[in-house]
Length: 386
Image (tube, rainbow, N blue to C red):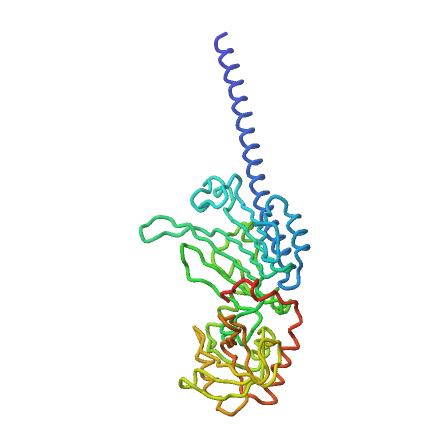
């Protein structure tokens, strides 16, 4: 009798344990499926956000279109303040991990269990700046974790790949002379710092769609694939290939016809001047305005000005000035520096002084004719480090 009761109890216990085990398996599979769905969903959102940002064009997309885009992203989109002519900022940010505190050091706070089950603590973040009713610059950032490595002290260090794609109004003239092969975009990367490797693409509104699609190709499978990405070429293969190819090419500043055209298109003012005097060993010019080629309305025909050496002047510009003799004519490309008394021409470093000739004049006029996009007022345009 006792034996039968024990056997019956053992049978019920075994059946209960089996139910518990089956329930644990089901819950485990459900949790794993939920996490994998979240991983897949985050990867899809990151790709969709890049697709949306790809359609936002600097100096082309209006504020009303940005508001519609931000509305589609719901609570993940925020605006810095009501938009005025002075501008405003839109941000869209998503985290792959649930319950992740905003702006936290997620590399340390991310629950290990999520990572063990396949969830990766990634972040996607986009910003759109608006000035005078038009988009003035855009930025798309994606941070992807890679397997940790050991530091010098033997402890594991969390590593991350960082994608940064930036749309700007134009490159500074001093930057242009270093990218003659592709003046409408640049590709770069930062040295490992804080265990992050950043691949950066910067482009202007004049870049071709084919070039932009190629250098900004992002492997979103790094977020959801079974194989984890480890190096920057896994995440941005085309940009990394271009960087690798460029290492074997000279990177000297040049002022070739293509750069002259682009600088003429992007500069605020252009004019033909007569050189009156060359001073300071060829680093300064006294000139007289002969002809306006682009704007320069603040400068009266026949009046004089001296073109000084702004901070950070490149050797290219110094060389160009030294080749212009007193009594000759030159073409100058310049911005305005609103001084205490009157506007002062500040040369576009790199190709700011061009010896006058019919061929050079034609190059400058061709570049000016390509300046077809609406300009954001200079005083409202954000300063670009590029």
